[in-house]
Image 1 (tube, rainbow, N blue to C red):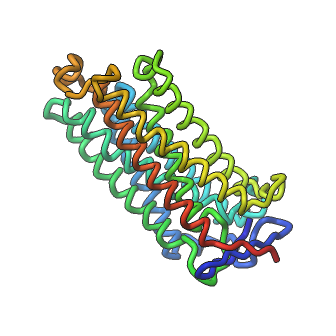
Image 2: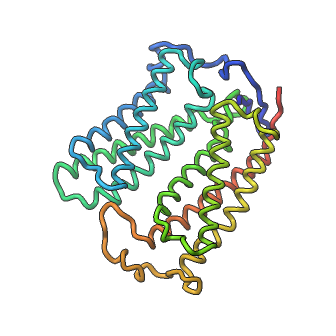
Image 3: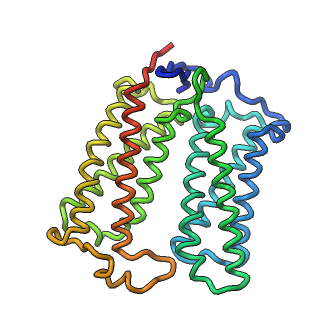
Length: 321
């Protein structure tokens, strides 16, 4: 879906190829443009990050594996984007080129941000001084550079008043990316069923996270595939309903999760010291009490994101042309 963004109106248009007339024609000169140079920086920084870690084998454990996956994934997709633009292959790309690059850049910025935080706090600090630690610290620095580079691309290519662009470049579109990313982090923290099993209120919270994630992911995929016209209802109505439903569901989770995890009247643990696993610092892992706290914070963050999404969706008017 292509959109023209004004102050309060989004005008939707359709094209046979899913591409606008302003798309870049394949040329090596694309690499000398500011956006091309920025993507080269992304490619270089992610490549150096995973190369430094791989050279000393410093990615053991789930947190190290996540960071390694992040850098390799971002490097690979950025390389694909550069190849597509250099070859002028946008019209043959299976996804909407109006929406894909900025959607990926936003995810990549969040991926690299998470790795830049998780890798040093759960892995690097437990390494002894030496070559391995030095490489890990350097990889973290390049991960931060990649994060800034991807965030800069999002800032450069997001929708501005009067521009014809994809829905994913608008604020609601970018919020969809944030919502799904935060949900994925929540899923990682609740990967241990013992955190919520046998408590219907907590199982409801897990269901909320899954339902809202699936709905937001569907909205993203519909835009990436230019399939918004396949819905039985108008796409703007779908977005507004999705945001409203998600706000209501997350409002219940933001109350129930901390209540049943930290209130002793409901079987929770109010103090971190009462969790024996948290008394000892374990490399490459997070204790259960910290997981519960992280999920509570992330639930509040996602609720705020859905509220902002609802406000922006209510303010926008979509007019088909």
